[in-house]
Image (cartoon, rainbow, N blue to C red):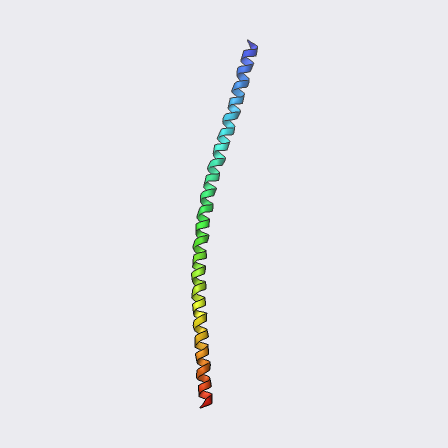
Length: 84
């Protein structure tokens, strides 16, 4: 009789430990899922920032090109004035 009761007690203890471990695993999975969402949101924010930076780089490049054109035109006009 003692042996059956001890076996049942051991079985219940093992089941309790398994349940606790499963609860802990579920909690960690929830935390992991939240972290994945946060990472995804941050990745999207980084992507948006990169897009904006690229657009600004293009705008700067266009302005640099315009500055070069205007500088060349100014040099030509300056040379024309000096040759007169």
